[in-house]
Length: 353
Image 1 (cartoon, rainbow, N blue to C red):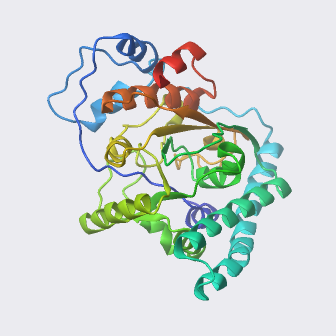
Image 2: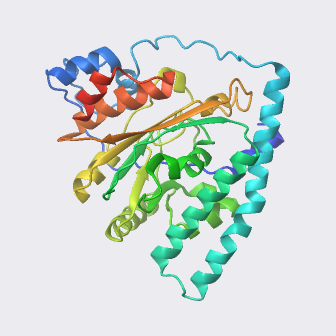
Image 3: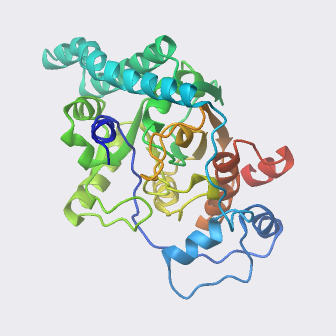
């Protein structure tokens, strides 16, 4: 890894999901099984005797991804270099501006002008405003936000794919438009290793984000969580739910080094959390961040495009089991994440309803 890539790796924030359980997958032979075969490549005959992440990855990958086309740039060398330097400038300015913007919230928190929950929510909104403003001043990406705004938002578990180290900046910059001005306070689950950078630690701690510690064993490899940290994460998540926060989880559990090929193994933590807290699940799909900063270190920041899209979907209804969640997430988010395009509206409605 080159020096500037290491620097950006340290200062960029990442959200990491939880793998709390291993659940067997037994699809039913119905309309959804047919949709799985069409969009996700799953067969109703699949009934593995035990959970195997590598087999699961093959099951959930989209059907057309047996071979991954090499990354090709539609940009000239000059355009790629310019966008790359603008991206570096954006992140560097975030490092300077964010602590200064958070200072008033920090002071009000220490003086007990704000409650802990109020302080955390304000810190998140300040971080979002900072990311949004700097992106307007340094527009290194063309960000398209496709919102789903509820007039009366309810406590929700949010789930999304994870394609790049830039994902966090996109979530921060897009959240106001994505979920609306009346959006509920939100906490995310992230890898504790990012606390080594003081900028990440400031925002994550002030916003009350929930950390989980695990081995830094590289993207695409199974996660190895530290048991004590994992227990604390479950405790913190339960408290955040009790305090009325929405929770954002990335069910793939780590950066996807092959987003063009569909999703990585999708773990059941989000579904289990939604069922245990009696909350609906809403999906968010990201596409294009990997063209700016790829999770595959052999590609890294070799910019191949700067069009980024993020879309929020209506809540999942009648999600009675993990099978329903896995199928919907893999089909809807997997398709948008890998191609930037949605499934036919009829099929989306079938999955959601």
